[in-house]
Length: 209
Length: 209
DNA sequence: TCCGCGCATTGATCTCAATCAATGCAGGAC
DNA sequence: GTCCTGCATTGATTGAGATCAATGCGCGGA
Image: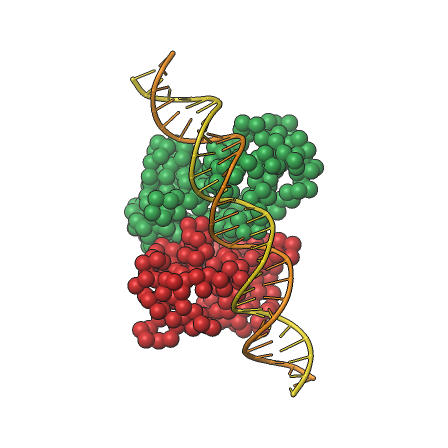
């Protein structure tokens, strides 16, 4: 699917389980003509499995950001297989649990931190995760990073100027950590907010009854 | 467990899967001495099954609000049973999916609506769900409703005065719908935000292979 | 080459909700 | 009864971030 494609809209009943194989998809809350980014899905992941397994309408709109490849599985067939294949069921459970934890982290980030702290922690995390000596690049357009951090483009732009005082200088899409110690002091990363969130499914076990 | 008890704290590794049988539990994001309500769990429900099944530390603190009864299941035993019992796995999946959708609704409510709209929709929902002619009572202390709506006590108090203009008058813990039509016009309920979110697990099916 | 569109930046202003502060009020302990 | 403590209300002030507006920039298309 090319960028900009709508995969589904909110209030639709899922016709397919969508497995994102490559690319990137925006999940947006919609109200009238307003859209707000709720989640940014990166491959590989399922798109809102919750709606599919619970037979409920989507709560969000899905739009392709980068060229995306998807596996489309008839929703009813998917549910039947989840209901008959224990290993798949465990895998979907792990995936769903991970998505839940990402939402919780996002909520904590938005509610416990100021805009400047969110920006600072976001940049610092990029720096810390990059290989030493590698140039650090913003992984997304600034408007999307701003959405992820729950602020407007304009505020993001201004905040980038503000965090120079704390050792983080952004020029274009390059992050220059002028003073990492200062940045760490001002923007302490919390693994319970900033850490990665990966799923490791349980192994199915033979039922000894 | 009596009110105020801590069931677990954030960053702890789950020792038990906790099934809330009766009562009410607050799930709080913590930063230094600040606490922010992320979810209010009502019986019957699992407390953060995501952390248990994914073998990851809790992201939130759990504190009993009303006297609560809990079933405590050794975490490893619980995971083993989820891994061996397909029906349980499906039930946990449905529960986890429901909790995910509640988080998404919460995020949409906070990001797409103003404080006044959140308050108005909350009150209107209470009114609409009450039996006709029944007096409508706030189901929680005002400070907790305010937390759920992502505002402070003071703002909540002031906003209650403001929404009188739209036909919703609150006195003590009683909601008086002076003008339901006006309220509906100003605060349109959206089932994708305000609707209930209930789990109906899939039925396990014999694997035909 | 020129045009047009979307993103980014910068400035000016506004506003919603938080914060700080003081008072009132109800229920529980003793 | 009296004290205490936590919740609620009300007022005054502040401030973080949004909004509105204008300009610049980069890129793709014909």
